[in-house]
Image 1 (cartoon, rainbow, N blue to C red):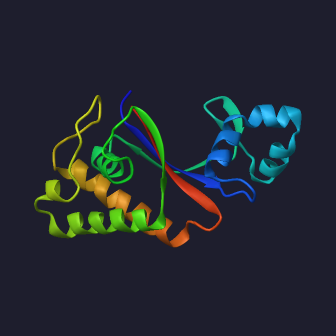
Image 2 (image 1 turned 60 degrees about the vertical axis):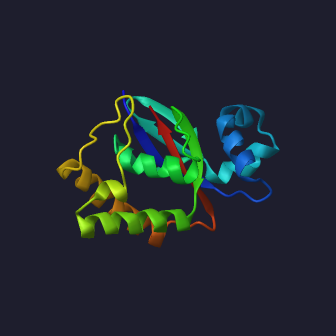
Amino acid sequence: MGLDMYLISLPKIEGMDYEEVHIANAYLHQHETEQNETYQKLKPYVKHFEEYGRSWDSILEEVAYWRKANQIHHWFVETLHNGEDEPCFTQEVTKDNLIDLNNLCIKVLKKKSAPQNILPTRPGCFFGNLHYNDFYYKEIYETQALLAYLITHFNFETHYLLYQCSW
């Protein structure tokens, strides 16, 4: 229980917009059973996953995960979701968004004073640490390294990047 946060990759499929691709994935099993036109479009992107004794097919792929990094969640809520924090939401993330967050992480790591003015924590139900201590800076450091990698290597031309949270 608590704040779980993900960055998820979703392929851009010719002839389908973001919403259509996202909804089609939710009904992937049905499309596969029917072997319909939508499934034929999805089929090249379907991957099989197995974890904890469970298996499933999806075109979504997790590229990042945080647990109770509420300062990062706060940034996504304020920047991409109009400040409205909901127990579960998904929001598209652009390369510019990653660059902006990466720059803020670098600023926090360099400045080491008044991080609450740059990337403040966000209280919530089981959201974790609210102090600006070693754990806070560890999350910022790991996030900055991850963002630097994604900025360089994630293909925004062929895939959507989504932020998803649940608490």
